Length: 242
Picture (tube, helix red, strand yellow):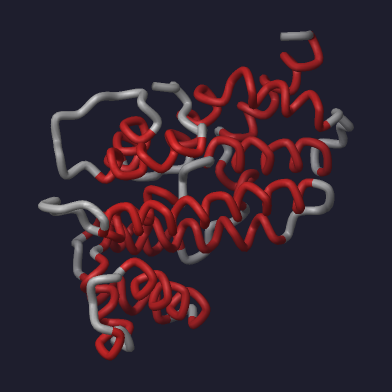
């Protein structure tokens, strides 16, 4: 690693550790997480989600997109029905990715174009992973767990690029994007795991992410990570190649 790359690596890691700098003020995510942790009352969670019509519509769409097994006629469910089916962990993961995407759309160029490329890749992987799940027999895996996990497939790259954009704008620096690319190529695993730890995502998501990227083994045949692992392996995206 060159001196320049080391500087970028150090400063990007420092920004990743400050969630407000990475994804801005988290607005509804904070009360949503508190409601989930505090008492687990789904009614409180529903009220918080319903306060943002855009998030409500997004969660309805996500719920329907993952639920291949349900007849089309039954997919126009109410928000309450959708959230009850999703479960609180998946609600939070979907909400996190929704607001993260909003943050990415606010980035200046060239970072916006670059990070949107990563996001499009995430979405494509999520579609492939859910399709892969429905091709398997005798598994008891929640399709939303597969989809929410897949939406974090290139999480480290997205967060690192977002942090770098902040560094070059708010930080008053002007580092070349080539330096960040070199850092991501060499330190992708470190940046990814630090992003998970800093942004308060659930432990199960991180565990399944590590299984998906071949960083951890499992004897659980119903692991969502194993489903995603097949997709990532075909795409050559595993952090630890097989």
